[in-house]
Length: 171
Image (cartoon, rainbow, N blue to C red; front, side):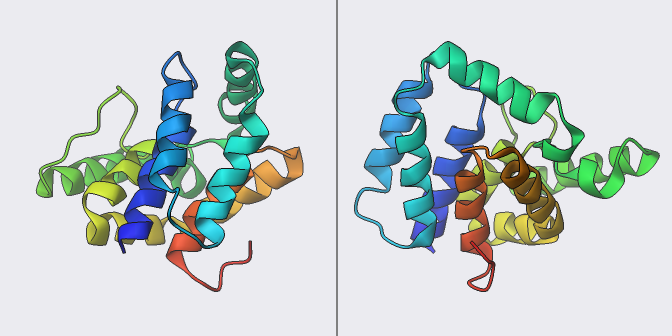
């Protein structure tokens, strides 16, 4: 379970917008998974290798193109289940209440369904966070399919997350 926490925290860092802190986050990820093995950590290492030499401005532009300009590749998990309906607001409120139940409040100003926030919750509150991730397995599968179609290196990060949820998930 500690390995899952490390993978969830690492994925959270890698899926945030790559700002000036990103090189330090990447180094922290590599350090934190250094002694771990398995498909999830290998996927994270592969992503870090693929992005190591990409200039930060190029990586930021790639991030925006990948996640902010396509509904098929959004990091907002309730989009896959609720779209832009009234149910979306209820789902966000329920998720926010769930976080509060465990004494956690996401930072960064993103909605509570933003995958990096969900992953940070899973790293801090493993059982409850894993349950949230399981509830959104379909969304993760759709996101993975969108990233695969695009040939995005971010697919490796989603593969790592999915590997922590079910050994039967195809990588």
